[in-house]
Length: 213
View 1 (spheres, rainbow, N blue to C red):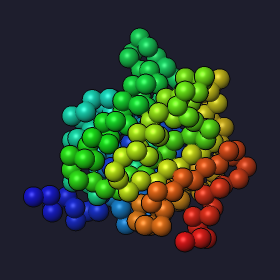
View 2: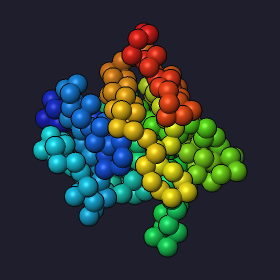
View 3: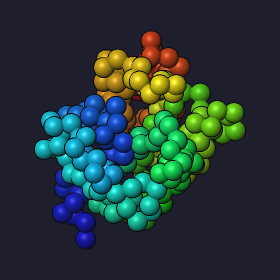
View 4: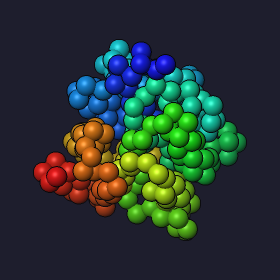
């Protein structure tokens, strides 16, 4: 039924318009994958121009289960990076919605379509119950992934935004290194069930992925 989709080797990418998004999409494309970006309506213009012509775009909201199901249909793997670094309660954007609820929807979509491979990008230091609401929500979302019956890999990079002012705090080199590791892990079985963490932007602890099988 879905052979016409599967021949494109599609990977659902959430967070494709965020800071690491273009780097991850380029890395996936270089490895023969076709990124399918789930993008909030009205945000299509934030897709990097060089990526736009080499990906598919599905409008949708991660907090709405039906949109995530639609975005995941026909894909062979999911790279889940999306989230929010700042709450906007008036717009209904809370850390619980953007991270925990959204991740639950991603896992549901994977179950519906029989997608076994999931790469989750969280944040270093996150844990359920952390007094910092952002880290608590990130930790709860990661716990959902690690408890799922899926072939998952978790990356816990240092935050790429300063939580105080929202300014980027990582270099292009850092993002490219992370993107390369994420794209490689999609097809590498030796990364299944592994967690790769970098506590700061000065060192890639996932360099292990590049040199050790």
